[in-house]
Length: 314
Image (tube, rainbow, N blue to C red; front, top):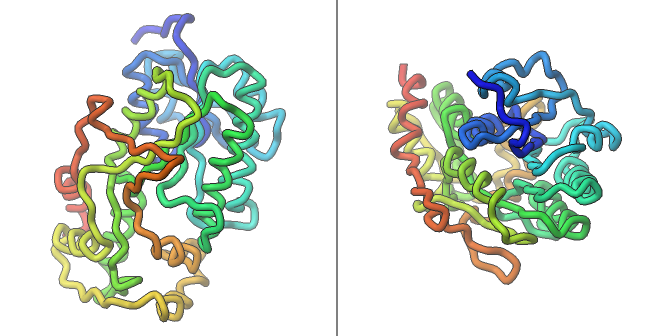
């Protein structure tokens, strides 16, 4: 392995140790970038460091609640990418800070340090005023970013899938244990799944794109309802399961017992999110991200998901 050239552009990533981050780093390595990854525990991120050539990937301890720590990490970067997001709140991690306050801070510090481009990964369906605090905080973060940094790009993917995703793996795990499973909202919510490697390629392409201050909605070529997705999982795992349609009006009653779990399968807030389809919709402020425009051919869930859910069929 060779040490990357000192002239290589530096990409600094917040949230690089997560599902999307690990796949993004592999793509950046292929493109020859030098990469810095913010983490709470650098010693636990050895697999990230060895994903590139010697010296190409560096992990650094960063306290996302400390502005000086964030500033020190960004210093010297050509590009900054934020992937940090949470699905559930905890005592320490709240939607408003993680999805709005933190991205705003990173955007401002990136501008102050003359970073060429700040890329923020948000979520399809985000909307100011949404009853879902998750979606509302995501939308607030997008708004705050552009108020601080005009050299920014926001990418809003639909459901992201891949070998170590949370969505398909988690539902396959649950469906392997229970004979009956509720279809919240009758299972009608629509998704437009995008393959994580396709998303990673798109993010990298935006490092070279001159378009700025744009919001891109991203999805795959196929649309599935929640019911179709769960039926797909059941078919792959070869389980006989009864999927029971539950209307939104009474769905919260069915998930109340789950709320005592440290990480509930579904929360009240996520039910609010499910009331809105997670598919591409052209608006005045958003651009539909056509993966084909970036010479990316969208991969179907049919070609990937069965490969990593087979283990649940035993």
